[in-house]
Length: 127
Ligand SMILES: [Zn+2]
Image (cartoon, rainbow, N blue to C red; front, side):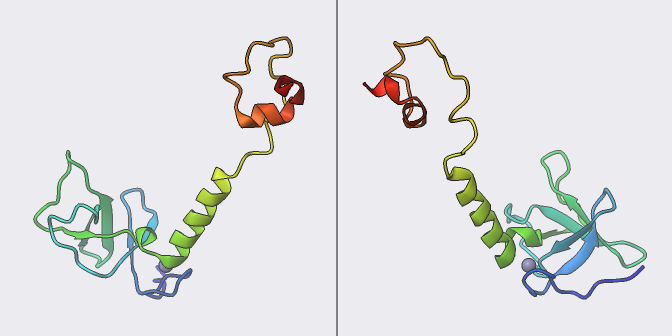
């Protein structure tokens, strides 16, 4: 099987590629994390074919003696973090859909509960 270069295609940082329990490729940071560092929530070991095996740590399945802790690269990848922040910023902008809608046509006693968005879409409530 072709082994990709040990670098992240998005940020160019050094990573190690391994396989999850579902057989998916996954990049982890090459650093070895202390056994009690819960931020590094992946357990890795090298199998008999020298493939890096990665799995999610959990209370039910804690670190085994032959594994060590690793950090998923997506948690530290600068490109990934930048994208995530951009997505979060986009999500926090007021949504365009849903402000118009049906609303409650007849309700005229909803002033107190109406949000700013609803006020904007049905101006008559403001008077
Ligand atoms: Zn990266």
